[in-house]
Image (cartoon, rainbow, N blue to C red):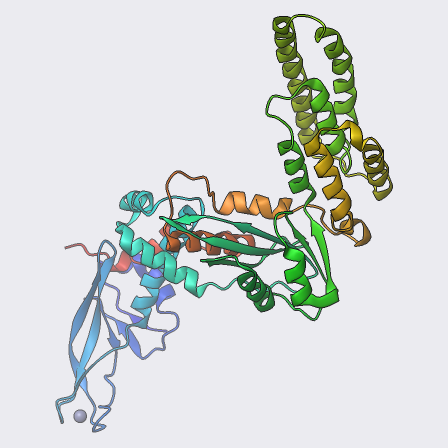
Length: 436
Ligand SMILES: [Zn+2]
Protein backbone atom coordinates (compact mmCIF):
# COMPACT_ATOMS: atom_id res chain seq x y z
CA UNK A 1 0.00 0.00 0.00
CA UNK A 2 1.28 3.41 -0.95
CA UNK A 3 2.25 5.78 1.81
CA UNK A 4 -0.02 8.78 1.67
CA UNK A 5 1.30 11.85 3.38
CA UNK A 6 -1.83 13.53 4.49
CA UNK A 7 -1.87 17.27 4.49
CA UNK A 8 -4.68 19.60 5.39
CA UNK A 9 -5.53 19.78 1.73
CA UNK A 10 -5.76 16.08 0.90
CA UNK A 11 -6.82 14.78 4.33
CA UNK A 12 -10.52 14.58 3.41
CA UNK A 13 -9.60 12.50 0.35
CA UNK A 14 -7.76 9.69 2.10
CA UNK A 15 -10.39 7.13 1.17
CA UNK A 16 -10.33 7.97 -2.50
CA UNK A 17 -6.56 8.05 -2.51
CA UNK A 18 -6.27 4.71 -0.78
CA UNK A 19 -8.70 3.21 -3.33
CA UNK A 20 -6.62 4.55 -6.20
CA UNK A 21 -3.29 3.45 -4.76
CA UNK A 22 -4.46 0.14 -3.36
CA UNK A 23 -2.53 -1.77 -6.00
CA UNK A 24 0.77 -0.17 -5.20
CA UNK A 25 3.31 -1.51 -2.74
CA UNK A 26 4.57 0.29 0.35
CA UNK A 27 7.49 1.57 -1.69
CA UNK A 28 5.44 4.48 -3.00
CA UNK A 29 4.32 7.77 -1.53
CA UNK A 30 1.87 10.42 -2.48
CA UNK A 31 3.36 13.51 -0.93
CA UNK A 32 1.61 16.43 0.69
CA UNK A 33 2.55 18.43 -2.43
CA UNK A 34 0.68 15.91 -4.54
CA UNK A 35 3.74 14.17 -6.00
CA UNK A 36 3.50 10.46 -6.74
CA UNK A 37 6.91 8.74 -6.43
CA UNK A 38 8.93 5.97 -4.81
CA UNK A 39 9.96 6.74 -1.22
CA UNK A 40 13.43 5.43 -1.92
CA UNK A 41 14.47 6.34 -5.47
CA UNK A 42 15.33 3.37 -7.66
CA UNK A 43 18.74 2.30 -8.90
CA UNK A 44 19.85 3.86 -12.17
CA UNK A 45 18.80 1.51 -15.00
CA UNK A 46 22.05 2.29 -16.83
CA UNK A 47 24.78 2.30 -14.16
CA UNK A 48 22.97 0.85 -11.11
CA UNK A 49 23.91 3.90 -8.98
CA UNK A 50 21.16 4.87 -6.46
CA UNK A 51 19.18 7.73 -7.98
CA UNK A 52 17.75 10.74 -6.11
CA UNK A 53 14.39 12.57 -6.14
CA UNK A 54 14.41 15.29 -8.74
CA UNK A 55 11.16 17.23 -8.84
CA UNK A 56 8.20 16.13 -10.95
CA UNK A 57 6.31 16.46 -14.23
CA UNK A 58 2.74 17.73 -14.15
CA UNK A 59 -0.03 16.04 -16.20
CA UNK A 60 -3.30 17.84 -16.69
CA UNK A 61 -6.64 16.75 -17.97
CA UNK A 62 -8.94 19.60 -18.79
CA UNK A 63 -11.89 19.95 -16.31
CA UNK A 64 -10.70 16.93 -14.33
CA UNK A 65 -7.46 17.77 -12.61
CA UNK A 66 -3.74 17.38 -12.58
CA UNK A 67 -1.17 15.10 -11.06
CA UNK A 68 2.54 15.41 -10.34
CA UNK A 69 4.64 12.41 -11.28
CA UNK A 70 8.03 12.16 -9.57
CA UNK A 71 11.30 12.30 -11.48
CA UNK A 72 14.58 10.65 -10.49
CA UNK A 73 18.11 11.70 -11.40
CA UNK A 74 21.25 9.62 -11.43
CA UNK A 75 24.10 11.53 -9.71
CA UNK A 76 26.69 9.31 -11.41
CA UNK A 77 25.75 9.30 -15.10
CA UNK A 78 23.11 12.04 -15.27
CA UNK A 79 20.29 9.75 -16.43
CA UNK A 80 16.80 11.09 -15.68
CA UNK A 81 13.68 8.89 -15.48
CA UNK A 82 10.07 9.36 -14.50
CA UNK A 83 7.80 7.25 -12.29
CA UNK A 84 5.14 5.13 -13.99
CA UNK A 85 1.79 6.97 -14.29
CA UNK A 86 -0.49 4.10 -15.24
CA UNK A 87 -2.86 4.92 -12.34
CA UNK A 88 -3.49 8.36 -13.84
CA UNK A 89 -4.18 6.88 -17.27
CA UNK A 90 -6.57 4.39 -15.65
CA UNK A 91 -8.48 7.17 -13.92
CA UNK A 92 -8.89 8.98 -17.25
CA UNK A 93 -9.88 5.77 -19.04
CA UNK A 94 -12.49 5.06 -16.35
CA UNK A 95 -14.04 8.46 -16.89
CA UNK A 96 -13.94 8.48 -20.69
CA UNK A 97 -15.25 4.91 -20.98
CA UNK A 98 -18.45 6.00 -19.26
CA UNK A 99 -18.67 9.06 -21.47
CA UNK A 100 -18.30 6.75 -24.49
CA UNK A 101 -21.07 4.49 -23.19
CA UNK A 102 -23.39 7.49 -23.01
CA UNK A 103 -22.48 8.48 -26.59
CA UNK A 104 -23.04 4.91 -27.84
CA UNK A 105 -26.54 4.86 -26.39
CA UNK A 106 -27.38 8.21 -27.92
CA UNK A 107 -26.13 6.96 -31.28
CA UNK A 108 -28.14 3.76 -30.87
CA UNK A 109 -31.22 5.93 -30.54
CA UNK A 110 -30.39 7.79 -33.75
CA UNK A 111 -29.00 10.98 -32.21
CA UNK A 112 -26.89 12.91 -34.70
CA UNK A 113 -23.29 13.68 -33.80
CA UNK A 114 -24.38 17.33 -33.65
CA UNK A 115 -26.89 16.50 -30.91
CA UNK A 116 -24.35 14.37 -29.02
CA UNK A 117 -21.92 17.30 -29.10
CA UNK A 118 -24.63 19.56 -27.73
CA UNK A 119 -25.44 17.17 -24.88
CA UNK A 120 -21.75 16.66 -24.12
CA UNK A 121 -21.35 20.40 -23.69
CA UNK A 122 -23.43 20.01 -20.50
CA UNK A 123 -21.42 17.06 -19.22
CA UNK A 124 -17.87 17.15 -20.53
CA UNK A 125 -17.36 19.17 -23.68
CA UNK A 126 -16.29 17.10 -26.69
CA UNK A 127 -16.67 18.23 -30.29
CA UNK A 128 -18.50 15.96 -32.70
CA UNK A 129 -15.37 14.72 -34.46
CA UNK A 130 -13.90 13.61 -31.14
CA UNK A 131 -17.20 11.91 -30.27
CA UNK A 132 -17.19 10.17 -33.65
CA UNK A 133 -13.69 8.80 -32.98
CA UNK A 134 -14.70 7.70 -29.45
CA UNK A 135 -17.80 5.90 -30.73
CA UNK A 136 -16.13 4.25 -33.68
CA UNK A 137 -13.10 2.98 -31.82
CA UNK A 138 -15.41 1.62 -29.10
CA UNK A 139 -17.46 -0.18 -31.75
CA UNK A 140 -14.28 -1.63 -33.28
CA UNK A 141 -13.25 -3.07 -29.93
CA UNK A 142 -16.59 -4.57 -28.94
CA UNK A 143 -17.20 -7.98 -30.40
CA UNK A 144 -20.66 -9.36 -31.06
CA UNK A 145 -20.58 -12.87 -29.55
CA UNK A 146 -21.10 -15.67 -32.07
CA UNK A 147 -24.51 -17.36 -31.97
CA UNK A 148 -24.23 -21.08 -31.17
CA UNK A 149 -26.19 -23.91 -32.80
CA UNK A 150 -27.79 -21.91 -35.57
CA UNK A 151 -30.62 -23.86 -37.11
CA UNK A 152 -33.56 -21.51 -37.63
CA UNK A 153 -32.52 -18.36 -39.43
CA UNK A 154 -34.12 -15.18 -40.75
CA UNK A 155 -32.61 -13.56 -43.84
CA UNK A 156 -33.62 -10.14 -45.12
CA UNK A 157 -32.30 -7.10 -46.97
CA UNK A 158 -32.55 -3.38 -46.58
CA UNK A 159 -31.62 -0.83 -49.21
CA UNK A 160 -30.38 2.27 -47.43
CA UNK A 161 -28.85 5.17 -49.32
CA UNK A 162 -25.46 6.50 -48.25
CA UNK A 163 -25.70 10.03 -49.58
CA UNK A 164 -26.43 9.39 -53.27
CA UNK A 165 -25.10 5.84 -53.33
CA UNK A 166 -27.45 2.90 -53.09
CA UNK A 167 -26.23 0.42 -50.48
CA UNK A 168 -27.45 -3.05 -49.65
CA UNK A 169 -27.65 -4.29 -46.10
CA UNK A 170 -27.80 -8.08 -45.78
CA UNK A 171 -28.77 -9.51 -42.41
CA UNK A 172 -28.98 -12.93 -40.79
CA UNK A 173 -30.76 -13.38 -37.46
CA UNK A 174 -31.01 -16.44 -35.24
CA UNK A 175 -34.69 -17.16 -34.74
CA UNK A 176 -34.45 -18.69 -31.27
CA UNK A 177 -32.18 -16.20 -29.50
CA UNK A 178 -33.16 -13.28 -31.80
CA UNK A 179 -29.47 -12.45 -31.99
CA UNK A 180 -27.79 -11.08 -35.07
CA UNK A 181 -25.58 -13.61 -36.82
CA UNK A 182 -24.30 -11.19 -39.45
CA UNK A 183 -25.23 -7.71 -40.61
CA UNK A 184 -23.14 -6.29 -43.45
CA UNK A 185 -23.26 -3.47 -45.98
CA UNK A 186 -22.53 -4.00 -49.69
CA UNK A 187 -22.54 -2.04 -52.95
CA UNK A 188 -24.47 -4.80 -54.70
CA UNK A 189 -26.85 -7.61 -53.82
CA UNK A 190 -26.19 -9.85 -56.79
CA UNK A 191 -26.24 -13.63 -56.35
CA UNK A 192 -22.45 -13.84 -55.87
CA UNK A 193 -22.56 -11.29 -53.04
CA UNK A 194 -25.39 -13.08 -51.23
CA UNK A 195 -23.75 -16.46 -51.76
CA UNK A 196 -20.44 -15.29 -50.32
CA UNK A 197 -22.26 -13.62 -47.40
CA UNK A 198 -24.06 -16.88 -46.54
CA UNK A 199 -20.94 -19.05 -46.87
CA UNK A 200 -18.92 -16.80 -44.60
CA UNK A 201 -21.56 -16.57 -41.88
CA UNK A 202 -23.32 -19.93 -41.72
CA UNK A 203 -22.20 -23.54 -41.37
CA UNK A 204 -23.03 -24.92 -44.82
CA UNK A 205 -22.55 -28.52 -43.63
CA UNK A 206 -25.44 -28.45 -41.14
CA UNK A 207 -29.21 -28.67 -41.63
CA UNK A 208 -30.68 -25.20 -41.74
CA UNK A 209 -34.10 -23.53 -41.96
CA UNK A 210 -34.16 -20.05 -43.57
CA UNK A 211 -37.02 -17.55 -43.83
CA UNK A 212 -36.92 -14.97 -46.65
CA UNK A 213 -39.34 -12.68 -48.41
CA UNK A 214 -40.92 -13.66 -51.74
CA UNK A 215 -39.04 -11.26 -53.96
CA UNK A 216 -36.11 -13.07 -55.45
CA UNK A 217 -34.74 -16.37 -56.49
CA UNK A 218 -33.16 -17.16 -53.15
CA UNK A 219 -33.93 -20.83 -53.62
CA UNK A 220 -31.24 -21.30 -56.23
CA UNK A 221 -28.64 -19.49 -54.17
CA UNK A 222 -29.56 -21.64 -51.15
CA UNK A 223 -29.30 -24.82 -53.22
CA UNK A 224 -25.79 -23.89 -54.34
CA UNK A 225 -24.69 -23.00 -50.80
CA UNK A 226 -26.41 -25.68 -48.69
CA UNK A 227 -27.29 -28.40 -51.19
CA UNK A 228 -30.18 -30.48 -49.83
CA UNK A 229 -29.55 -29.39 -46.21
CA UNK A 230 -31.73 -26.29 -46.45
CA UNK A 231 -35.44 -25.84 -45.73
CA UNK A 232 -36.67 -22.59 -47.25
CA UNK A 233 -39.67 -20.77 -45.78
CA UNK A 234 -41.28 -17.75 -47.47
CA UNK A 235 -42.47 -15.07 -45.04
CA UNK A 236 -46.26 -15.27 -44.66
CA UNK A 237 -46.58 -11.63 -43.63
CA UNK A 238 -44.81 -10.64 -46.81
CA UNK A 239 -47.27 -12.80 -48.75
CA UNK A 240 -50.08 -10.93 -46.99
CA UNK A 241 -48.60 -7.58 -48.03
CA UNK A 242 -48.50 -8.74 -51.63
CA UNK A 243 -52.12 -9.89 -51.40
CA UNK A 244 -53.19 -6.47 -50.08
CA UNK A 245 -51.35 -4.81 -52.98
CA UNK A 246 -53.22 -6.97 -55.49
CA UNK A 247 -56.37 -4.96 -54.73
CA UNK A 248 -57.28 -1.39 -55.68
CA UNK A 249 -56.71 1.30 -53.09
CA UNK A 250 -60.46 1.97 -52.92
CA UNK A 251 -62.01 -1.48 -53.16
CA UNK A 252 -65.69 -2.33 -53.16
CA UNK A 253 -66.96 -4.37 -50.20
CA UNK A 254 -66.99 -7.40 -52.44
CA UNK A 255 -63.30 -6.92 -53.29
CA UNK A 256 -62.49 -6.31 -49.64
CA UNK A 257 -64.19 -9.60 -48.78
CA UNK A 258 -62.15 -11.52 -51.35
CA UNK A 259 -58.98 -9.89 -50.02
CA UNK A 260 -59.80 -11.14 -46.51
CA UNK A 261 -60.58 -14.61 -47.83
CA UNK A 262 -57.06 -14.73 -49.24
CA UNK A 263 -55.58 -13.42 -45.99
CA UNK A 264 -57.70 -16.07 -44.26
CA UNK A 265 -55.71 -18.92 -45.83
CA UNK A 266 -52.93 -18.82 -43.23
CA UNK A 267 -54.37 -16.56 -40.54
CA UNK A 268 -57.75 -16.66 -38.87
CA UNK A 269 -59.77 -13.74 -40.30
CA UNK A 270 -63.24 -15.31 -39.81
CA UNK A 271 -64.55 -12.36 -37.79
CA UNK A 272 -63.63 -9.86 -40.51
CA UNK A 273 -65.13 -12.15 -43.15
CA UNK A 274 -68.43 -12.41 -41.25
CA UNK A 275 -68.60 -8.65 -40.90
CA UNK A 276 -67.82 -8.06 -44.58
CA UNK A 277 -70.36 -10.71 -45.67
CA UNK A 278 -73.13 -8.74 -43.92
CA UNK A 279 -71.96 -5.50 -45.52
CA UNK A 280 -71.85 -7.15 -48.92
CA UNK A 281 -75.52 -8.05 -48.74
CA UNK A 282 -76.22 -4.37 -48.11
CA UNK A 283 -73.88 -3.41 -50.94
CA UNK A 284 -75.94 -5.43 -53.41
CA UNK A 285 -78.99 -3.38 -52.46
CA UNK A 286 -77.13 -0.06 -52.48
CA UNK A 287 -75.71 -0.71 -55.94
CA UNK A 288 -79.30 -0.57 -57.28
CA UNK A 289 -79.57 3.02 -56.07
CA UNK A 290 -77.94 6.15 -57.42
CA UNK A 291 -74.19 6.52 -57.72
CA UNK A 292 -74.22 9.30 -55.18
CA UNK A 293 -76.16 7.29 -52.60
CA UNK A 294 -73.80 4.34 -53.06
CA UNK A 295 -70.74 6.55 -52.55
CA UNK A 296 -72.09 7.97 -49.31
CA UNK A 297 -73.00 4.49 -48.11
CA UNK A 298 -69.67 2.80 -48.92
CA UNK A 299 -67.71 5.56 -47.22
CA UNK A 300 -69.64 4.88 -44.02
CA UNK A 301 -69.45 1.13 -44.46
CA UNK A 302 -65.67 1.17 -44.84
CA UNK A 303 -65.30 3.44 -41.88
CA UNK A 304 -67.29 1.00 -39.74
CA UNK A 305 -65.27 -1.93 -41.01
CA UNK A 306 -61.91 -0.24 -40.34
CA UNK A 307 -63.06 0.58 -36.85
CA UNK A 308 -64.06 -3.06 -36.37
CA UNK A 309 -60.65 -4.29 -37.58
CA UNK A 310 -58.88 -1.74 -35.42
CA UNK A 311 -60.78 -2.83 -32.33
CA UNK A 312 -59.87 -6.45 -32.99
CA UNK A 313 -56.25 -5.35 -33.19
CA UNK A 314 -56.47 -3.47 -29.91
CA UNK A 315 -58.06 -6.47 -28.25
CA UNK A 316 -55.24 -8.74 -29.45
CA UNK A 317 -52.67 -6.26 -28.22
CA UNK A 318 -54.32 -6.03 -24.79
CA UNK A 319 -54.28 -9.80 -24.54
CA UNK A 320 -50.73 -10.01 -25.82
CA UNK A 321 -51.79 -12.21 -28.72
CA UNK A 322 -50.86 -12.31 -32.39
CA UNK A 323 -53.16 -13.14 -35.27
CA UNK A 324 -53.99 -16.82 -34.96
CA UNK A 325 -51.96 -18.92 -37.37
CA UNK A 326 -53.98 -21.74 -38.91
CA UNK A 327 -53.18 -25.42 -38.74
CA UNK A 328 -51.83 -26.97 -41.90
CA UNK A 329 -55.11 -28.78 -42.46
CA UNK A 330 -57.22 -25.58 -42.22
CA UNK A 331 -54.83 -23.60 -44.42
CA UNK A 332 -55.00 -26.28 -47.10
CA UNK A 333 -58.79 -26.47 -46.86
CA UNK A 334 -59.18 -22.67 -47.19
CA UNK A 335 -56.80 -22.53 -50.10
CA UNK A 336 -58.51 -25.36 -51.96
CA UNK A 337 -61.88 -23.63 -51.49
CA UNK A 338 -60.58 -20.49 -53.16
CA UNK A 339 -58.81 -22.43 -55.89
CA UNK A 340 -62.10 -24.17 -56.69
CA UNK A 341 -63.71 -20.77 -57.39
CA UNK A 342 -60.69 -19.31 -59.20
CA UNK A 343 -62.63 -18.51 -62.39
CA UNK A 344 -64.92 -16.11 -60.53
CA UNK A 345 -62.04 -13.84 -59.45
CA UNK A 346 -60.32 -10.91 -61.12
CA UNK A 347 -57.01 -11.41 -62.95
CA UNK A 348 -54.74 -10.21 -60.13
CA UNK A 349 -56.41 -12.60 -57.67
CA UNK A 350 -56.18 -15.51 -60.11
CA UNK A 351 -52.46 -14.81 -60.60
CA UNK A 352 -51.94 -14.65 -56.83
CA UNK A 353 -53.71 -17.98 -56.25
CA UNK A 354 -51.63 -19.67 -58.95
CA UNK A 355 -48.48 -18.23 -57.38
CA UNK A 356 -49.51 -19.56 -53.96
CA UNK A 357 -50.06 -22.97 -55.50
CA UNK A 358 -46.60 -22.88 -57.09
CA UNK A 359 -44.94 -21.75 -53.84
CA UNK A 360 -47.08 -23.91 -51.51
CA UNK A 361 -44.23 -26.14 -50.21
CA UNK A 362 -42.16 -23.06 -49.33
CA UNK A 363 -45.11 -21.26 -47.73
CA UNK A 364 -45.89 -24.23 -45.50
CA UNK A 365 -42.38 -25.53 -44.69
CA UNK A 366 -42.61 -24.20 -41.12
CA UNK A 367 -45.45 -26.64 -40.29
CA UNK A 368 -42.98 -29.52 -40.58
CA UNK A 369 -40.18 -28.14 -38.38
CA UNK A 370 -40.54 -27.74 -34.60
CA UNK A 371 -40.59 -24.11 -33.44
CA UNK A 372 -39.88 -22.84 -36.94
CA UNK A 373 -40.98 -19.26 -37.69
CA UNK A 374 -43.48 -18.55 -40.49
CA UNK A 375 -42.53 -14.91 -40.90
CA UNK A 376 -39.58 -12.54 -40.86
CA UNK A 377 -41.36 -10.41 -38.29
CA UNK A 378 -38.49 -10.63 -35.82
CA UNK A 379 -36.01 -9.29 -38.34
CA UNK A 380 -38.40 -6.59 -39.56
CA UNK A 381 -38.76 -5.42 -35.98
CA UNK A 382 -35.02 -5.37 -35.64
CA UNK A 383 -34.70 -3.31 -38.81
CA UNK A 384 -37.28 -0.84 -37.63
CA UNK A 385 -35.34 -0.17 -34.43
CA UNK A 386 -31.85 -0.21 -35.90
CA UNK A 387 -32.04 1.73 -39.14
CA UNK A 388 -34.94 3.61 -40.60
CA UNK A 389 -34.53 3.83 -44.36
CA UNK A 390 -37.32 6.33 -44.65
CA UNK A 391 -35.50 8.86 -42.51
CA UNK A 392 -35.43 12.20 -44.23
CA UNK A 393 -31.81 12.83 -43.46
CA UNK A 394 -29.54 10.45 -45.33
CA UNK A 395 -26.78 8.78 -43.42
CA UNK A 396 -23.24 8.51 -44.58
CA UNK A 397 -21.87 5.03 -45.11
CA UNK A 398 -20.04 5.13 -41.76
CA UNK A 399 -23.27 6.23 -40.11
CA UNK A 400 -25.12 3.21 -41.51
CA UNK A 401 -22.36 0.87 -40.37
CA UNK A 402 -22.37 2.47 -36.89
CA UNK A 403 -26.10 1.84 -36.57
CA UNK A 404 -25.85 -1.77 -37.72
CA UNK A 405 -23.03 -2.63 -35.33
CA UNK A 406 -24.48 -0.76 -32.34
CA UNK A 407 -27.86 -2.47 -32.82
CA UNK A 408 -26.26 -5.91 -32.98
CA UNK A 409 -24.27 -5.16 -29.82
CA UNK A 410 -27.39 -3.96 -28.07
CA UNK A 411 -29.23 -7.10 -29.14
CA UNK A 412 -26.41 -9.30 -27.88
CA UNK A 413 -26.79 -7.68 -24.46
CA UNK A 414 -23.41 -5.93 -24.55
CA UNK A 415 -24.91 -2.80 -23.07
CA UNK A 416 -25.80 -3.99 -19.60
CA UNK A 417 -26.61 -1.78 -16.65
CA UNK A 418 -23.71 0.51 -15.86
CA UNK A 419 -21.15 -0.74 -13.32
CA UNK A 420 -20.54 2.82 -12.16
CA UNK A 421 -21.80 6.27 -12.94
CA UNK A 422 -19.95 9.16 -14.48
CA UNK A 423 -20.00 10.76 -11.04
CA UNK A 424 -18.30 7.71 -9.50
CA UNK A 425 -15.54 8.07 -12.05
CA UNK A 426 -15.39 11.81 -11.51
CA UNK A 427 -15.09 11.53 -7.71
CA UNK A 428 -11.77 9.75 -8.18
CA UNK A 429 -10.37 12.99 -9.56
CA UNK A 430 -11.29 15.03 -6.48
CA UNK A 431 -7.81 14.75 -4.90
CA UNK A 432 -6.39 16.00 -8.20
CA UNK A 433 -8.81 18.77 -9.00
CA UNK A 434 -7.08 21.68 -10.61
CA UNK A 435 -7.75 24.47 -8.17
CA UNK A 436 -5.63 26.98 -10.04
ZN1 LIG B 1 23.44 6.31 -13.87
